[in-house]
Length: 124
Image (tube, rainbow, N blue to C red; front, side):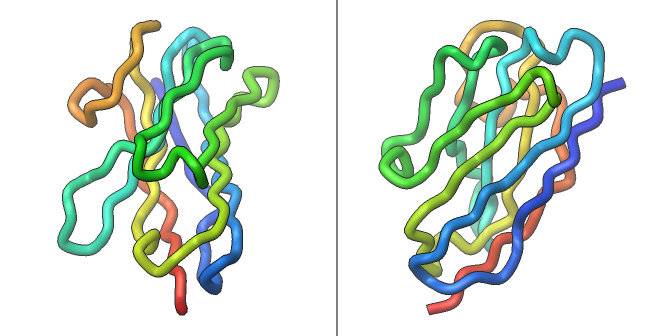
């Protein structure tokens, strides 16, 4: 059984940074592609970034690539999302997801497992 637990969200000011973590457990998870998504109130779930199993290849959405960085530590079974220069439009629930194959995936339906999310709230 795969479990993903996000943490690191909170209430911050515009211009601050957040480092989100996703603690992952499950068989051969280190071989899977992992991703981060977010969903603001009234919005669709939005792809943010993805990382391959080895951590050697990452891809971020154009809208966030200058401020968001995905990484993973397979020894600790944790996936990270570093978010810099936060603004109120970044307010959302942030989700970690696992894609049960080694190929890249940027669409939500391609991901097989999801965490419950962590709320990030940015005030101006």
